[in-house]
Image 1 (cartoon, rainbow, N blue to C red):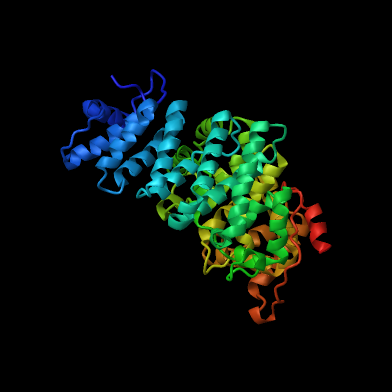
Image 2: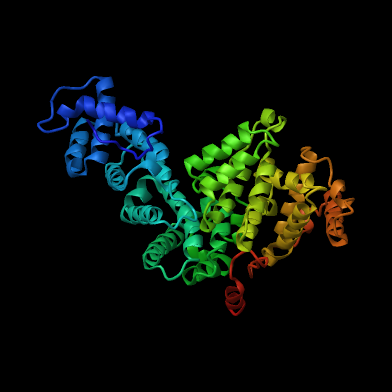
Length: 498
């Protein structure tokens, strides 16, 4: 009888993927030891043999090299089925795998990179998604370490064959560094942080033409690392010396601001299990019946204080990667804005709440209807409006935060930001997300200052400044609103001294 691949409780149902692999292993067991049969397998036998070999690699580490040689001798599809099966194991079974099987998984994936297996890009992305933000447990840090080592060791191959996997890795490790750099006096974490920094700096310095394709969220991630000494030269060059990146198409940081980030990057920081549960909540649970689902979700994924930073990634995912169809929007299903409101209310740390609000409004700052989707900015608008009058504090704090961003996020780019926010409001009204902003301007519970700012926006919506009359763009400094959780004063002073 073959050993079990995953660790489960006695009351858990058997996993069909594990059952399929184990049954194939038991069926082909006599053929998995040399001398290997020389007969050509049928198509069905070929698929089962792939599964049997994979199970053997994961469960028999002492025979892993025998199994991999067997696999190399039988492959006729460029390892396509084997890699696809590995991806299913990563997506569905990884959290339940034992330590030995996880070690074997990393080993066989490295082998697949070495043989240029078909589908290796999707497999590596699937494994990146298993790294959990805010999780400082030994197992999660081990996975971070193994993957960053893999990307550094296999750098040349990946750069030539799968360059966009490197941008996924960069997005992942920049985001993880924001959490890891908040922890001190942890020797194991210090070594990992240095490897992550080395990888990210190598990408930014040597392959900025790839990094550039990430878009505006590259700046959002780098913002949280402005206090890390190794990233200060990166910031200075982004602001003052863009030619240092040796990328012809990059001449100004505003080009990043005005480039939308693909939704596939936001999936990187949400595990498949989190994605499944969030989509279930937003697709099947009715408004008014969501509390027990939210309580379960919080216990499952947000139980420790360190995990709170996940809220930032969840907000970005909901805004940019989960766009429900009209039948869901018009139904009684809990809307996206309500889930985001709950996530914001769950924040206990000020810097997490501020970064979550930044994730909510980030596309507003640079919105261009020709490039951006109104669905990315809809949740913030509906959360502002639908919080009236019962949750006026939510409306007030969101509007105050938006105006704070407009004034302080990047002072030298205020023209771009003001134009983006104005375009966002214009598009939301014209598309019918809200009928007008009168409901806010006429709200007695809002302060005169906020109503005055809103009135100014309303005037701007009626008469936008012609493009030819707008001031020219300049790059001198980057200003951040207070409370965003980044330490920028020293860097700003250094830049102004240049």
